[in-house]
Image 1 (cartoon, helix red, strand yellow):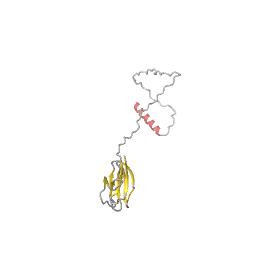
Image 2 (image 1 turned 45 degrees about the horizontal axis):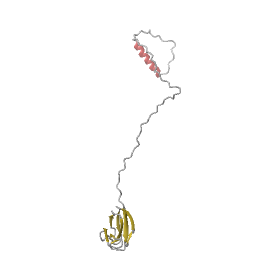
Image 3 (image 1 turned 45 degrees about the vertical axis):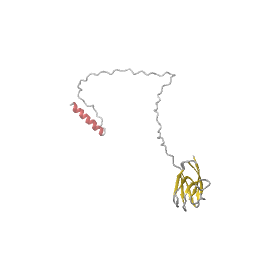
Length: 177
């Protein structure tokens, strides 16, 4: 019976929550007398003392904890790879019975490209005051328009350059260490 009342009360409570409020009863409902139930005895909770906190002295400042930051490493770039020195290149043009430019200064290891334009030419190195070959370099004969010859200078010095067909075509190359 008790269960039925309990279930009915629960249903009534749920229905009252979903509907408009019911008018208050004019008389209190009568409930059957409560029957004693056995409940095991429980022990009353015991009060515990709160931990004592140390109070800072009046002249002593309260200690504050400052968080320490872990050091962070700055990003690093990988070391640059060594690059080979770029070869230096200079050029001289053989055209219209002249060599342009007629004087250049280069470093040891520089390659000079002798460009042939117009008629046939043959670049070669000569001694400064005559047309004799110095033996440093001599291009193949009969280089025609649109061809070229190149030579890399490996020693410092002053070199006279001539055309093998037109001995009045003279230029100077100064090679510095």
